[in-house]
Length: 298
Image (cartoon, rainbow, N blue to C red; front, side, top):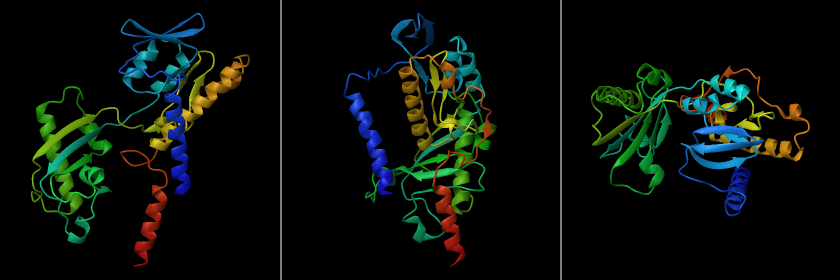
């Protein structure tokens, strides 16, 4: 655990050092709308406004927006790989309660802060945001986040930018019923939250992956990084970004004289990935196995 914290701390330290130098120029808000290759450089623009010229580009995004951006970029191999990606849809429900959520076992309720939910169609994850942000707070509202299953999200999918009121109400009721089931409560016994807000996460998590750290087209000097290349976790995202950064650095230092040697991930097939509906959690499987073993001994 100490090594893990040191490792993460070292990465954060490197990022902060880069941001404090002239090597990095972060521009926000900025939404690149066009990529144009010209005279050996990439020209980026935002709705007609020039946003700089670059030796290489990185696509750290996916879904419809990334596909539109790549459609006219002249990067057919990169665009083809991006289009192979399949994403799930998940509903997120924010709910604020006056009191802690009840459970049949009062001993558990005092320490109940979150859980993966199994066997409930409308809920796959629940977490107490109040405990996360204010762990010592005893009074006040109890704010929870509930995530649906991917199957529930797909079955109730609507345009996420314009959710019909009827759908929102249906999803809220369905997910609160799922919370009751998950907590082992009788139907209708859960106290109504005094605040709710629901949002569809339309392009949520990858359901397939090539299982490689990054994609790079040396002919186009363009690459892809993201959690979905290795799975669907924060760890995968960090490893993918570092892998592509190192790969592009090696390519540029080579002078581009052997481009074919630096092509990576342009033809890899995608395979279904396993994990929870809200992503993968490396190391959690081992902890679950230990917990099951210990429970079998009691």
